[in-house]
Image (cartoon, rainbow, N blue to C red; front, side, top):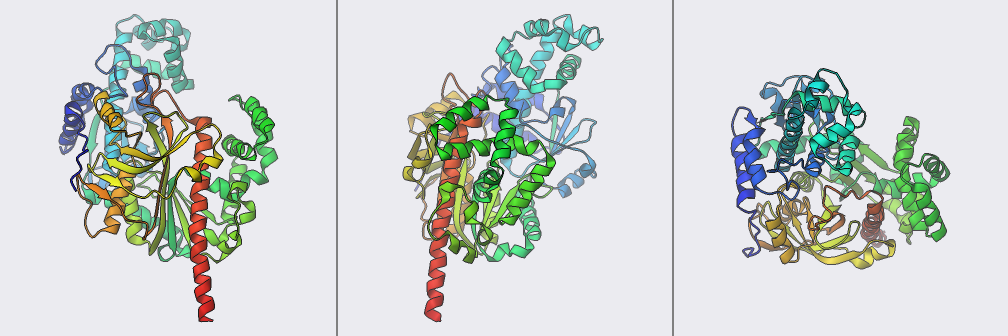
Length: 579
């Protein structure tokens, strides 16, 4: 049936997307400045001041956190899917270049130190993320450069008469920034403050971009290489021949509730955290301890673990050893796709070490399980489609697909949980209806401060920058509450596994998957993009999202245990019948 609720991106949004894909088809470099007009014209929610002379600090910070710290030294960004693609494009030694990272986006990035950044892209979603981020960063950088150039400060900084940290008030006035926004930029650059301000004074930004290959087969080949490397690394597990549960989530929550590391090192984690308190956690711990809620206390330990692990490499080695002893193995991904994974062998788990909220009857039967859990770090956008398509084509049996991730919410609060049973995919235009195996009852007992809503409608967007008020209003008016980037691509891959054809376009689709495998999608709200007071730029979930994260994690593991125990009991009964 044709989907009557197909959301068009709007004239300017569509024009901008069409413009950069048209230019990227060129065999040569394109200049980001050629995209600035269409970028500004789309009136992105994340870049409302693009056309203004006023510096849009939120847009600048958002884009800067998705680009490496060396970005001010970059002139050319070369994008490709694999080492072979880069070699064919004339970049033969990129793996000799140092790897660089970003604060808020996982992506394989290599920098030659001379002006060329190699960016590995695993789907067109990476392009829809990179191009607007580069454009927003360049627009706002050049505004700051203009502000300095119009004052006497630029010459003083360039000629080393003064350093930036000696004239903070004068710089803040020249940029026209509030104290709050000024502090945010200072926090972003930290110890590199003088260097970055000098760089702004010296030059305008003028990025060039070259997409070395963009064929569908190039993306598929990159993901296939990722899978083959995973199979090789875990050859002894026979992953291709055993039942599989797929969990798309962060890389720590499942391992934390299964390994028992927080239990074993309870006192060490707590003492370290309270002695090195930088977030007001001492006060929070007093409140939690007085409440006598074991779940809240355990969540606090999970949150505190990160700084404890970062404090000493030996502690981190102890964590890895602990996890491997309980059947949890790490895979750090192929050189082409920055996608970490955990492989969890159910029969090697130790139920006595589990988070107390996982307690259940007959968990000792897990030792007779043949199944594995593949926990992948949630991918970006259409990469999810390629990853799941590869897994469904390669695994002998998939018993459940569970997706846990962040989403914007139209009407809830940061930290609230949304359980969708309808997803509109902006990329394909499809509106999917499906049976979500989770409901409120599966999560409510693990929540104190967060609300949970089931029977929700979610929309999968192409990119965070590629939204404006017109589109957001259309979503809101038709009761779409969640906004995210992965559910639609995952459902497109599931469609192709259930039906003998490529996923269609612009259709309403009723999924009938429950007889084949479980589907569970859980979203916790990381921002409220429709709010005038809060946006994706100003909020980070941090401790607020902790409760929701572990409520989802526990619900997913309990569901996997429930299904797997049924399979084990069925196998045991059949064996008894044969005997």
